[in-house]
Length: 176
Image (tube, helix red, strand yellow):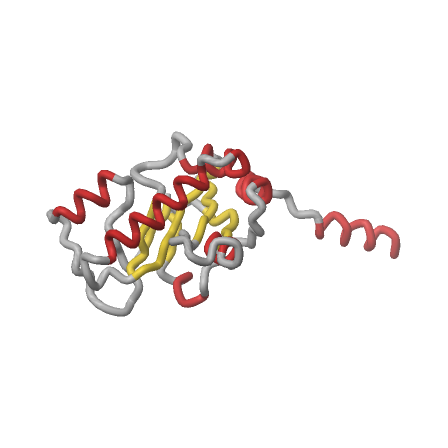
């Protein structure tokens, strides 16, 4: 009887590795469950659409901070599993939007991330970033709570963001 209990414990501890976890590991990143890699103060601002689930997250900025200290690094990658089982990657950058000058900083961070996605190690993450289930851009600007948003929807800055595939800043995200 005791041996049977041991067997159940072993099976219970085996967690199926998600496609996101596998892709993150291939890129040398440390995946965490759900939104755990995201700083706790931002987690409540990030939700998933009805029927979806978070399949994992990575702290990209934390991973590259030591080796690229001067780079404008992107912060988070978040895996989302849709109702049909497909997994996508959404890229989230918490950043103030209190001045239009922040747009240039965000575009530098986005360019850095897009360059990473072109490397062989990030091949699977890139495929999940541009998977058919994505609606709109997979790059999200999470407006930090401090300060108002100074970037208006019809401005030159908004057009520049759209042209580069970066969503307008918003204080609450609902990922696909």
